[in-house]
Image 1 (cartoon, rainbow, N blue to C red):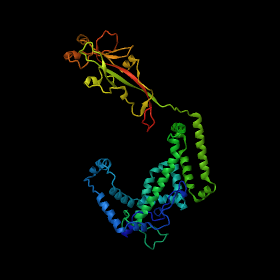
Image 2 (cartoon, helix red, strand yellow):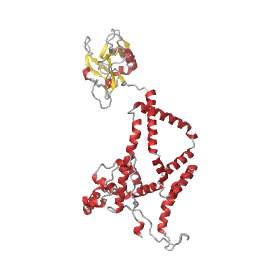
Image 3 (cartoon, rainbow, N blue to C red):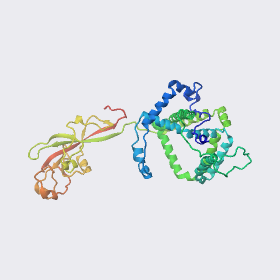
Image 4 (cartoon, one colour):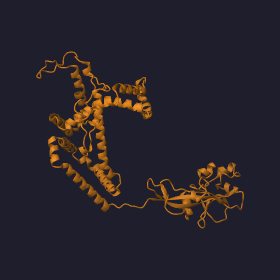
Amino acid sequence: MDGQASEPLANRNEAIPIVSITGPEDYEPTPEAGGRSPSKRDVLRQALPTGKLKEKLESLSSQAERPESPNTMPDRLFTIRSRKYVDRPGFSLPVMSNNFRRFNARIGVAFIFQNHMIRLFSWKFPTQTLSFLAIYTFLCLEPTLLAVLPLALCLFFIMVPAFLTRHPPPPSNHPTDLYPLAGPALAPAPNIKPAPELSKDFFRNMRDLQNSMEDFSRLHDSLVTFLAPPTNFSNEALSSVLFLILSATACLLFITSHLLPWRAIFLVSGWSATCAGHPAIQSLMHTTHTDTLIQDQEATARSWLLRLSNSDMTLSSAPETREVEIFELQYRAIHTENAEHELFLFSPSPYTPLSPARIAGDRPRGTRFFEDVQAPKGWRWGDKKWTLDLLSREWVEEMCVTGVEVETEGERWVTDILYDEEGMEEGGPASPKHSKYKGKSKEKLVKRTWEEGNGLGKKGEWRRRRWVRVVERMAIGNTGDS
């Protein structure tokens, strides 16, 4: 009696068939997939003796299993994320083998449910299918009954079978007699245990697991084949039209979804989908070549979308372009009155008097030559050479640069203004590198705007001008320059 109450869950009926999507001719049965050839147990015995296989699995499980012993319930609750989610183990063959064996020994309940669903929707027992449709009809007409559904499933499929196991009817019970509810329990409580390794149920689970993996693979490939071409923008015109249609439909449903008769829609859809699995309907669809008609309608819809995309969509073939900048920095020693500015480097920053790098005393960063300036990652040069930005006043105002003198003609240099001590006391900014400007005078500095160059003021140690060049986006995988 104890063994009957603690049997492992496994699908002991016929094997769950592999659902054919592209046609049965695409699948070749193998000994592992249910073909008529030597049994799996015979093949396994020929490949490896049972004793050696069991010893190997036990050794792997002993290496992979690690006891976990959190002390209290709060410890378990607060350590789930830190120990079991963040610190997940890496890939390991022993762990994979152990987890697969444990998973396969416990997955039987899922295959039992799958087998029941196949029987239900294939009308193998019409009374059960009609009962399901009756319950589905009640749920569609009164959706509030969905709150009762989980409780009803728990009562009728878990607790009632467990009670019947503990209180079995007498052997002489007649169908007309009432079920005996009095008296003590006559059988042990049912218990669910994993299927023993190398047992029939263990290999039944492996059989159904391999067929389920084939089902998933076929469903995945079919969905990718059907959905990927129109939605992955391989044909940008077609995907753009589909995007506009879906966007308009989503906006329309957002406004009008509350006006649709959802109860009737779900009721008719559920009955239609369930009735389509009836053998008579399946035979009718086969004789009328419904699959061919559906494929023809799909081809018609696809051709209509292609015509619409070709007639209404105009896509730009020119690559995206941007303008990039580089600043030519020149430097001279301040203590030499007639010294000329000399090329220092080309930098992405103008290194203005109030720039963070300048205030911190850091040297500007960049390269010594134009040829060493590279295009940004993912872009390439769109023209042949750099162009001097003649609108020096505009970029100075746009970047809010102060304390500089701007040339609006000529070479367009933007030069630091060197203020004397009197000018500083009046509020002019000075370079933080000037050692003679110290003490209280720095506390009196007030920001001044830029000045247009007239050649009369004293110039500071740095000057810069802006160069621009056009870049264009590169195709992914193309790293060469034009």
